[in-house]
Image (tube, each protein chain N blue to C red):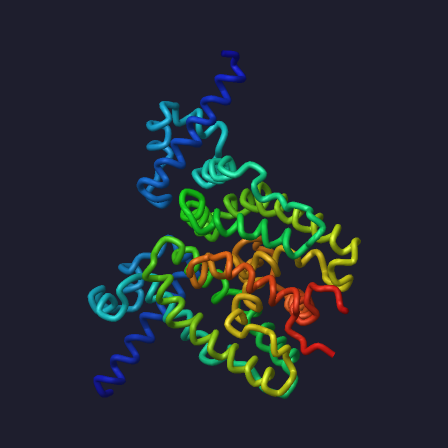
Length: 191
Length: 191
């Protein structure tokens, strides 16, 4: 093994240990010491790469779904949003991703570093994918030209996060379909 | 003073102490002991009424805005939603309510009792007000008859909570106006 390979293998072992322990005892009770022990790594090795538990968890979670939240482009914007949002709620609604991601967002309410990392590493890239897919649909005449693309994430993801974090009711494919229906039709009475 | 008056005064002193200390040192670092000491009350007195710090905080926060989140009914549904949502973001975007409510939602990601209390005491009653106002508008022909009222909170509040908890960018009146515009117009291309 080269040094680079050894480094990559160690990184992977640490992230796997974080996810395993997170599932076993919950994010809140988890310490960097316990993760280091499980991974057979030194605490300093972990802190060299990740400044906090939140940063390590974010990377670990993101390693679970490489590019699984891309949008297809079949030419039908509603169908493509539905496909992607079904995948998203399958992730949010199930372990290991769901409960650990929920805990991470909890942490982001106290720790600005975690909040920033969450945005830089996940939300902003995800928003770019969303806007790109909607822009193509708008250019192709499938979306209202008046729809403000900078609101895309808030309007599409907001109702999912509301259910995930606030009401904490199950996130289902049917819920996604109902939300999309409401957003596409709009609330105004047709003229 | 009667016993009832004494009880009410004590309750108020405890909630005030919780809010003051929460602002001074932050929700996360706050203990029931510190609140009891500040309020001049016994810890058992507090625990008799509130099973947890989360439950006490929720009541304390709700005492800050009695019925300020009602909807006016001027006959113009968009204007009335705007008025109420401007009030809501003024609360969310400023101390003391904003940062403490944010911390409480953080706690609700770990503590199911706090999550349940948040829904029972705040979200569900608020949803009832929202649905009632929208139902009147729908009955009066101001709202699409196809709009599913059970999604009202998720669709209207979801984008606000997304900004509040995830991107953590400032919540402005302009943002509310843009969201309402997007929701009323709808994403679909007009036929």
